[in-house]
Amino acid sequence: MAKFIVLVAAITFVNHYNPSLFTVMWQKGGAFNASGSAKAILFVHSECGAPCDAALDHLQSKSVNAEIIDVKNNAEGRKLLQQFVDTTTLPVLVVGHNIYNGFNIRSYNEFLYEVEGDNIFSWKDKRVYKEHFNEFNQPKVVIYSGRGCDNCDDLRDDFDSNGIEYIEWDIEKDNEAKTRYNILAPAYNRSNGSLLYVGTRRIEQFDMGLVSQAIDDLM
Image (cartoon, rainbow, N blue to C red; front, side, top):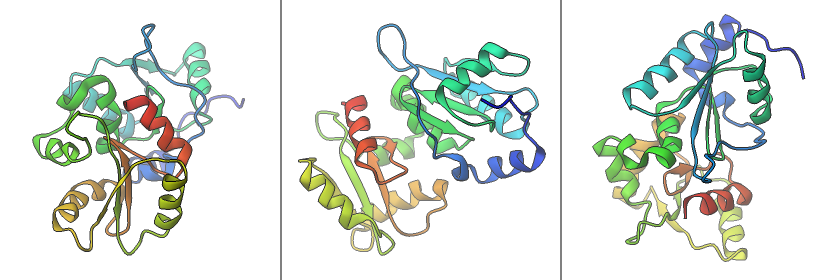
């Protein structure tokens, strides 16, 4: 594994203003307590700058009890980080099986739901995510689809083949779904197209394995 490299200013700038470029990571493990419940770990570097500062400030503002690991001059911390991701770009948030590289408020809150519950959300977000759960508070598999949903046909076939129940909201025809979509989508630079959720967890890639993992984690 290459020696840990301090972030250069260009990467820091891109990571802060377009974190979606860095969200697809190879997952090597997860962060869990001895009881098996998810816990939160935030990896930062004291010279990371704005992205790390924003992540730390957000966790503090939400009173999240996360383990903070500064990897500067910290060989053990770097070694632990490398157990989760192959990256030198920080911050990295690990919550249970979720790994997020960069900083995005909505993504952080959606992941931190597993350790903080819906207290992590604003009242507006609670109203949106409420529709992602059934009357027994079990997460639904939800597709927000529109004209830009190029993968929706394949996804429906996968769900049907694997016996996975799902609900699809067409944002071109359902005004209430469109309203929810318009609240969720801007954080991911989406103006039209599709979003896939299991409960509060957005599935970045339309991948059956990720959907199955989310169902296992959240049920």
